[in-house]
Every structure is written in C-alpha cells, then in structure tokens.
Length: 166
Image (cartoon, rainbow, N blue to C red):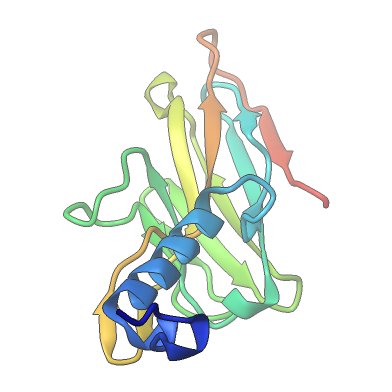
C-alpha cells in the first residue's frame, strides 16, 4: 500500500478542512489579545446629569465600515444603540451621539444627561461581514468593551471626556 507523501496530498486550502481551518484562524485572531483592531478606554465615568465621551480607535482597513456603540449584550436581533452613517456625520439617538473621523482613524461616542441607569458594559465596534470564495457568513465584529460608571449622587453639570492614545 502506498503511503501519501506531502506532495501527493491535495492543497489544504482547496479542501473543506482547509476552509474550516482558515475560518478558525480568523476567529482566533479576533479573540487573541494584541490582535484586536480597535482600542480605547476600558472604563469611563461621568456624574449624574453630566456627559461623557469615548474615543474609539480603529485600524486603516476599517475606514469604510460603519461603526457602532451599543449596550451589552449586543445581539443581532437587537438594533445598535447608535451607528455611523458616513464620515464626519454626527448621528444621534436620544441622548447618545456618534461621529466617525476617518482622517484620525477614530470615532467618538457621547452620552449626555447621564443617569444612574446608564452605568454598565458597552461595546465600541465596527460592523463587518466575511465574504470569501462565495461564502457569506458573519463573524464577531471587531470591538472592545467599555465599562461606564455613573456614581450615585447629586446631579451636577460635570462632564468627562476619555480618549485612548496608543
């Protein structure tokens, strides 16, 4: 019986196993620390009645994609709290606004008139889809989590702006 040698084997990328391995590699890259495509502050805080801003940085390859901010859990069946609609256009949804500045590779989210109920985990993300070799599927969007803290206390007009520099 002949043993298969490496040269006799079909190319890995043309087999279903090869495609599955490439998809697995892509998923791992999204979850491995240091390979994230977005960055920003992990925690921001603001006073009740005040406002806060979060600056989210992204890599050049995401310039053309929509960016979003949502409260965790962010599920496909729920709409994003707020999502960009082009460069340098502020989009507002209630007390939350977002604006993409592709020239700086950043987008900024602002929460106004903070309440204690605004405290929680949020996500800065880039809305992406994977399309390769006719396969259309969804992978987790590149994102990072931000903990919003709104300490209880008397209402004030204080505001906080947090940004991340790499």
